[in-house]
Amino acid sequence: MLSKRLSYGLRSLLHQEWLWLLLWAGGLILLSHPQQSLMAYDEGYYAQQARWMLEKNDWITVGWWGSPIFDRTIGAQWLIALSYHWFGRSEWAARLPSIVASVVSIFLTWRIGRRLLPPTAGLWGAAILAVMPLWMQSTKLATQDMVLVALELFAIWALLHSEDHPHQRIGWGMLAGIALSIGFLAKSVMIVLPAIALLPYLIWSHRSNRHLTNLGLYYGLLFGAVPSAIWLSRSVARYGPLPLNQLFEKVILLSRAGSESATPATFQSTTTITYYLWHIPATTFPWVLFALVGAWLLWRHPQVGRRTLWLGYPVVLLMLLSLFDTRTWYYSLQIYPFLALLAGVGLEHLGRWYRSRAPRRYRVAVGLSWAIGVLAILFLSAGAALLLTPGELIGDEIRPYGWLGVLGGVGWLVPWLMAVNRPHRVSLLQQKLWQWGWLLGPWLGIAAAFLTGLWGNYSPAIKTALTTEPIAPILAHHAIHMIQPGGDRDTILLTFYTPHLGRPLTDWSQIPSEEYAWGNGRIVPLPEAGGYEIIATLGDWHLVRAPFLPPMTPRG
Image (cartoon, rainbow, N blue to C red):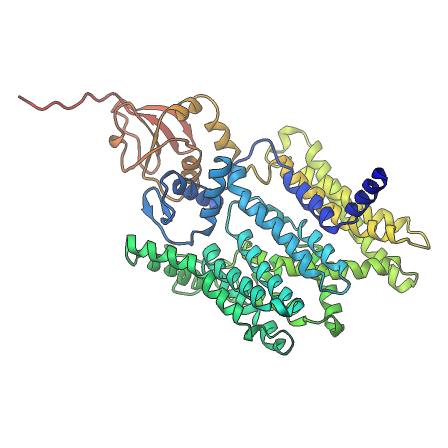
């Protein structure tokens, strides 16, 4: 009797979509190279700010080497600092908030997508989101973006949930408002763009959803603003108008990055208004093609409902991001969940065509399989060439890309092989295998990127140098000062990976007797006469030991 119950429980568990989604995304996230190192911009910057926050017990200041720099909000640093407090300071701890936010976003994408037709499109969409390369790379970066997207998706899910449970609409509306307001703490006014993008759904569907008359939404916006208000008020009380000036000056500079008033000292955009129109298709291939199919299907079938959300939200958000003069790849992450859902609709539809007996339908699916098969062979060939080329003809930093080509190509051979061997009658299982084959190539390619360290081990040279002789023993037992620390890549990484930091100094002569300091010899030349001992050199940077200076004694 007990064995029957266990067997039934196990079968029931294996039919749970959330479990397969967790294994699919979680298994990929857990893969990593043995050595991890931070990316200086902006990962190392946030990671170090969080470190100072915890060490100094100062949860108000956003600073750099003792100077307050309120050019961004503090939400990401709070989360990273809490992660340090619980798990110790490491790359994994710094990236944990983004990892958790990404997993939450994937599951919210699944739950939101269950309202599509068919509901299985939600599962496909979430699974596709987990194999979008830039999404998964950002999952393991200690930045603001994953937290922002998770808050946006939670707000949308709460609004949809309030429609399904009208008697709880006040509470769910409040949660949606809180999520949107806390988004300011995560990434400043960037939360305003998705809020505006929701307006077509909120206004044109008002007759059915009544969100704009839900008092809970407005209460939530007020309550969610409390943490930001407290932080800003405490900051102003300590530093005067500086926090407000720097924070909103940064927003103005970003919004004018492409204008004639931009200067090299501020921000100069090198992109045009069409940036996302080529960048998103290039970085989400082949899912952007499936998304176009899904968008066409949703447009043709109004019975799906909420077209102003499924189609209007990503389109309006894309337009707003394009109009914003500062255009970067990580801003587009906000569009990825809905692009993945549309791709899920397209993949579900094409899977049915693969199973169809109508020649004009299954031939389309077979043709797509042949196309991806050709691409897979090209990837395999290029990857094998990189791996097999003699070492003197190719650099070691290029060779790991061969594994991306080989593993990604092997995965994408699956749809082609199934199309070549397609039987006259295709079972539902064969249809699912054909569909999952499209996801297998990206999954294996991303796995290769993580395992080889192409993603995750961004600064191997500096990390290795600082953890080996002769630098490691000195860093372990001495405080290290910094000569004129700035915001450049090397300063950020040396600051984070130096366990005991001293003081910021302006010149080598300020190093106390027999103590150590990092300094850029190109910016601040090291005096030839003075007895300074160079312990190690990393590029332009020197780890220097000051000479013994006898104490000054007063005369008489």
